[in-house]
Image (cartoon, rainbow, N blue to C red; front, side):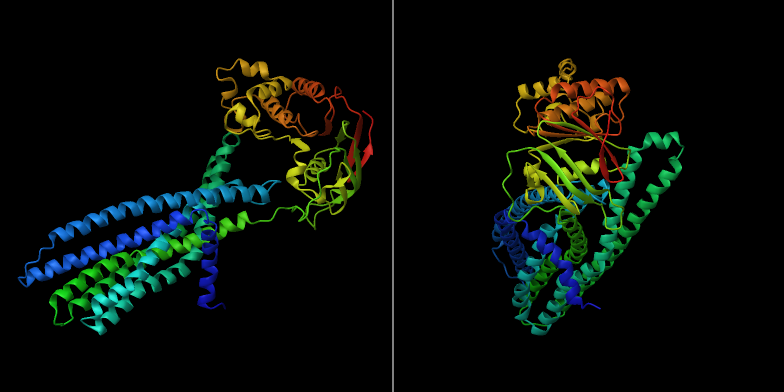
Length: 553
C-alpha cells in the first residue's frame, strides 16, 4: 500500500506539470503573487492598527491613528484591486495558453481521429477540466503562500505575551491551513475524478441525444434516451454531493479551529492588554485567510484529477510518430504500396496481406470494393495516419516512414466520404486547405467545383455562414464545397474516398463530371464501392481478401 506522502506526490505531480507549462505567463503570475502578499500585509497591518486603536480606547489612551487607518485601508483596497486585476489576467492568459497547447497536442496525437474517446469526453476535458485548473493559481497557490507568510506574523504577534498560547494558536493555524487541505485533497481526488468522468459521460449522452433527435422521434425512443441521460446526470449529482459533503465538513472544522485559537488569545493574562487585543485582531485576519484553504484542498483534488485527465489526453502519442531524423521530401510524386500487410489491432483480422499498388504521377487509379474491404485504410496508410505492419509505402521512391507526416500532407490531400464543414463562413472553410488564399483564388476553386455561380447568388457570397455540419446547403452542394476546399490545396496527389456517398445518381454523375474536368495534371486515387461509368481512369483494381486484382470496367 503506498504511503500518504507517495499518494500526495502522485496527486501533486499533474498540477506541477500544468504549472510548468505556464512559462510565458510567469512574469505576470509572479507580479500577481507579490501584489497578493502586499495586499495581505496591508490587511494584517490594518487589523493590527484597528486592534491598537480599540485596545487603547478601552484603557482611555487617546491615539491619533484614524488617519493611519485611512491610509492603510486605502492601500489595502488599492492593492486588493490590483491583485484581482493582475491575478485574473494572468490566470486567463495561462488558461488560454493551456487550451492552445491542449488542442495542438490533441491534433498532433489524433491525426486519424479521436481514437476510442468520444467527442463529448474530449469536449469535457477541453472545457470542464481546463476550467477546473483556474483554481491552481487563484485558489490554491496564492492562499498557500499567504498562509506561509502569516506563520512568522502569528509568532511575533502572540509569542511576546504568551509563547504557550502562540504555540497552540500556531498549531491550530497549521491544521487549518495545511493539514486539513492536504487531507481534503487526498479524500476528494477520487470523487473529483468520478465527477469529471460523470460530467463527460453526461455531455456525451446529451450530445448524442441531440444529434439523433429525428431518429429518436421516429422510433418512439424518447423515454429510453431520457432515462439514459438522467442516469448519467444522477452519477454526476452523486459525485458532486460527495464533494459538497467533504467541503462542508472541512469548513466546519476550520471554523471551530479559528474560534479555539481566538479563545486561546482572549484567555491570555498578560501585562499588555493592548498587545493582546492586537494579537486577537491579527488571529482573526490570519484565520480568515487560512479558512479558505480547506476548500482549496477540495479544489486541489478536483484540479489534480482534471490535470491528470488533460495530460492523459494531450500526451497520447500519435499512432505513427515522426522519425527523429526525417529524410528530405522528394520532388517526385509517384505513390507505391509494396507488399503491404496491415491490421488495426493485433487481435483483429488482417486488412491487407502483401498488397501492392503502383500509382504513377499524373495517373488516375480506382480501387473498388465492398464496405469493410479496407478501401479507406489505403487512404489512412498513404496519409501516414497508420503504419503498415510490414512492407513499404513510398512517395517519389522514398519510404514515407522516413518522412514527417506534415510534409506528406503537402503532397497528398484527401476528400473523405464524410468531410466536415465547419460552422463558419465559406471563405474560412476553404482557407483550411490554404490559409493564405485570397478571394480570387477561392472563387477559382469554387468555379472549378462548379458551385461558384450558386455562391454568387447568396447575399453574403464568400462570407455566407455554412451552418453546423454545412446545414445551410444540400448534400450535393456541401460535397462541392468540400471538393473546392480540396482543389484549393496545392497537393499534387488527391485521394477521393467514396466522394459520392449519399448522393442520388444524377448528382453523383454531375459530381464525377466535375472531377473529370478539374483534376488535370493531378494524381488521382479514387476509392469507391462502384463506378458510375463516366470516370476517366487509367486503371481499375478490385480489393478483396486483402489483395488487389486488376478489374475490367
